[in-house]
Image (cartoon, rainbow, N blue to C red; front, side, top):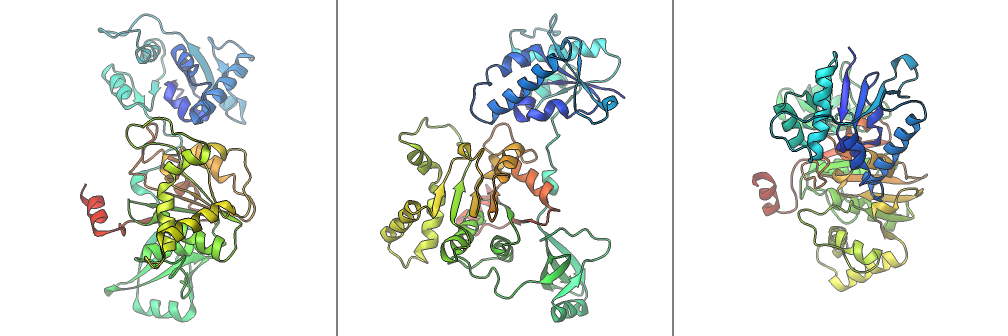
Length: 442
C-alpha cells in the first residue's frame, strides 16, 4: 500500500539521501522545513553539506514539474517504482492551544492535514524525541528515520563461542586449522572461541582466515609497541592491528578498555619501529562533552592540541616504557616525530578530498561521526594505508546520533562480511581498578 511520509528538518540534516529512502511512496516536505534548511546552508560542517545537497536535489526536481503538485523522484531504476516529492504549506492550526509561530507545530500541522485528506497511511518521520512525543499525543503516526540504523543491542562483537569436544581441540592444534563449521555463519577475521563441552574451563582460540579457521600464530599480538595485552580480547585486537591483510579495524569498548592505547601501540610498532607506513595520522571529531568553553586561540596546531591531549597522553605512556624514561626526553621525542612528519594530527574537517597513501590512520571517538562521515573518511585511504576506528557507542556527545545511528556502529555491521575488515569489542576496563569500578557502577 502506498504511504505518505512527512519529513522533519533533522531527517535531512542527518542524511542528504533521506529524500530517496522511501521507495515508491510519497515524500512531503513542509515549507517550514525549507525555511529551516535555509539557516544551515552556509555551514561548513556536515549539516551544511547535507543541507546544500538536499536543496540542490529539490531544485533539480523543480525543473521537472510543480513541487506543489508533486514531482517524480529518481530513486529507482524502474520508473514505475519511483517515489514522488511534494512541498506543502501549512494551513489552519493544530487543535488545542498550539502556538503556530513554533516551527515544529507548523510541521506537525502539515502531517495532520494530510491525515485528514489522504486515504492511504500518513507517517511523520523525525529524529527529535520530543517531537515524536508531541506527534503521538496528537494522534499522528510517527517513526524515527532508520535507514542507516543498526541494532545496537546485537552489534557484531568479532568473537564467537562454539562448543566442541576435547578430541576436536586436539586435532585442531595438530593440524593448525579446521574447516568452517556447517550451518554457522563465520565472518572474515572473526575469532572463534572453542569451548570443551565436558569442561567449561578448557578453551582454545582460532580465527577465520582464507576461508578456514586457523590457530593463532605463536607470539602474534603478545608484545606490540612496548605493551603486553592484559586480556585475550586485547591480544585479538593487536593481532588485527598488526596484520597487514586487515586494512580496516574497528575497536568498540567502554572507557579504559584500551582502544586508543592499542591502536597507537600498533601504529608506533609498524610505522616508527618497522617503517611499514610513512607516518601515523590521528584525528578525532571536534565534539565537546558538556558545555563548550568557546573558541581556542592560535592556529590549527594550537587549537588541535587541546582535542588531541588524550593522544599525547597515550603516546607518552608508550614511550616512557614503564616509567624508565625521563618525561622531558619523551616530550622531545614526540615533538621530533611531529617535526619530521612521522606523526600528524589532523582535524576531520580537513580530511575531505584527500587521498592518504601508506599511512597508519587512527580515527578516535568515531562514535560521534555520522554514517556518511565515516564513509567519507574510510574512502580517503590510499594504497598501502591502514584505517583504525575506535569509540564507545555508549558515550555519544553528538546530539543527532545515538548507539544505533552513529557511524562506528554502522561500519561494524556493514563491514563485518568484508575480507579487509576486522573488529573486536573490548568489554573490560584495564586502565585501573578505579576506572573499572566507575565504568561498571556509575
